[in-house]
Length: 407
Image (cartoon, rainbow, N blue to C red; front, side, top):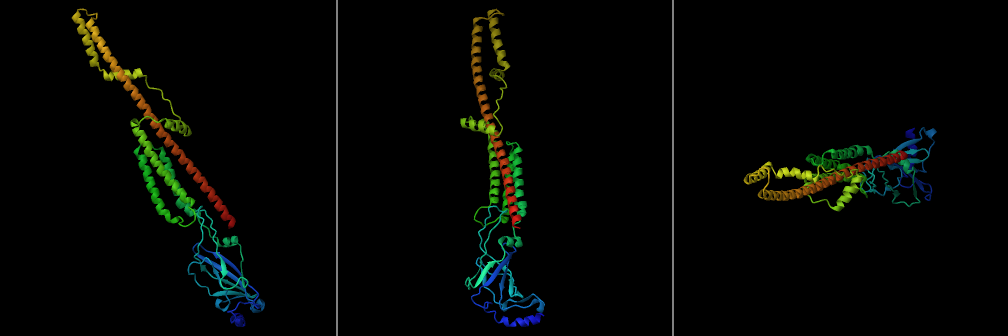
């Protein structure tokens, strides 16, 4: 059967140099269908055309199709315009010839082409690349070219899409873990040195992580991928939290040496931001009145030796006047001098106590400014992580639905 069919087809092999039509005005319809096996990989195009010189009875010949060498038939010069490199795919030397004269020609082609990539939603992106099939030699009315399947069917048969789970597991989830650890580091005391050291270690680890995973990120495209913006924001938040920790630690440890809090800081931070972060300014009750503080300091400035000296002077004056129970003029003058000296000391003590109270109030205000800033950045962290997580989930869900609709 096959040898007999091959012998019967031998005369048409000599016509392989011309287009297989009886009338030159009749166009040859060439239908194209291809399967994409991978990005930067292999495209397998299938060309179907009609050969008017061939036909047989499949019942009498015992077969509906036969595979024959490609060089025995006329082959249309269909090329891909976006081809930019040599085809290194293996050669397939055979075609299928059907009993009605249809020729099915399928061969793998490794296409290296240029394509504008939209990687903004990477790794949840869907690319739209164009491959143009046409003939360089023949006019458009000689072989007419058409696509036998729609783009949706071609995508369905190829089933080529980016595996987003790989990038989510290797990039997004570790970044979320590190930013969460940095978030919980706000629970450490801000004045402790361990908090700043811990944050510096996190920044170093995150930088090394980005350098290692840099090969997984796209390097071409018209726009910056959203995932790169996410990584940059994560790193920026870590650096901002470290700077904020340094600022708060400085405020808490050196607040006593600072000048009084400016008025605009009191209004903006201690009133507006304090209400925003639920830390209103507390009015503390004084631990003691000025008089109590003065008496407390009097004991420091006037020890018991001075009281004993004053009593000794008064007793000597009484003995000199012979009046143990009465005071003389000399004793009165000495008592007045001591009282005047005591008044001057009490006035100095009062000024010192008032100054200490003012410094203590200024120090407490600076410390409260530090705590408010610390709470504010903590809230910004929570807001950023929540918004980023929700955004990623929405983009992932939309991309998955689009893939499911196409496939």
